[in-house]
Length: 158
Image (cartoon, rainbow, N blue to C red; front, side, top):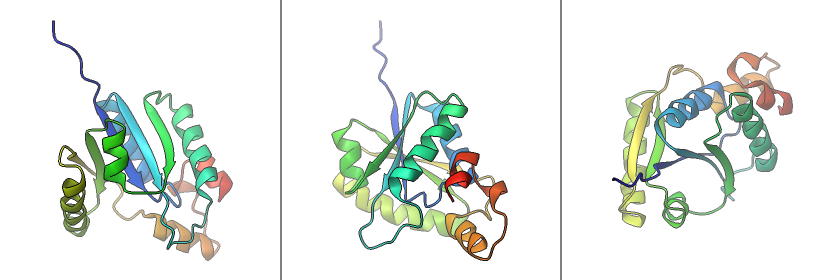
């Protein structure tokens, strides 16, 4: 009898804010992997629009509403590849909107492979290529309604 190996994946990002595009990638990942870790990375050189702990709670509320029981949300300051290695996470999830995203992600993947050679990358095609956290923040700063781009719990804290 074969032993089932739990397939764990990590989906890192600043998620400032977490958009419906991010949620789409989480849903696809949750269908494919046993455990998915949405990792809110802390970058000391960037000022967040929404505090990471508030975003964590909003993402948790979002995945709970969708019964995505295999999704965990974590706030972490440090190297993603090290977090993955320390927690037995074998796969890195990334969403791609276009070839520029692919080129960027491949460069980061090379660095992460130096830190954690066992890490495998899985790319998902983004469904709404125009949506980005930066776009949502900019539209919101001009008073535009951005509710269509965000899960309700995230919109509520914006």
